[in-house]
Length: 152
Image (cartoon, rainbow, N blue to C red; front, side, top):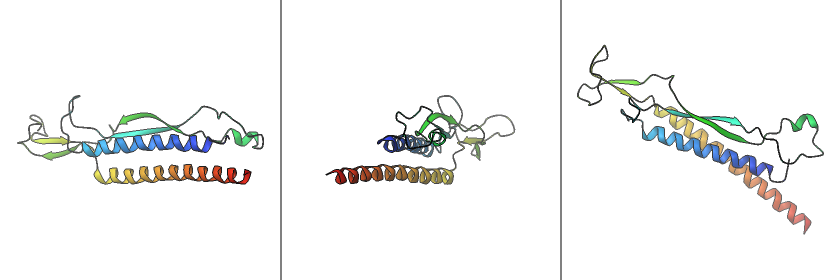
């Protein structure tokens, strides 16, 4: 692994977690949106992470070949998908302009499948992951500084 590999890997985590926080905040902001441009109630979004697959640009001569294949290079966001599995919340309000007019659910309004508790838990997890990546960057920076101090 190169000198800056840890920083590059942590940077990919910072970018991915920042996007995850943006998606979570969008979910929270639209928790009561009953009508979207596509039609129907807002659907919760979620971020899908995948490992980066490109090879590291530098290989250590001291690291065994079997371990070099398992060294990660970070994370990337593969997609932001809508949660179509969870059901929309039905609230009875026949005076609402988006109330269902016909069928067995007449008078009910479809609200987004955003559960505020789940969003807050996801936000805490994303914040902690962001902090962990910042700590990795600070630790690497401190290690590089110590190495430079030894050379002096």
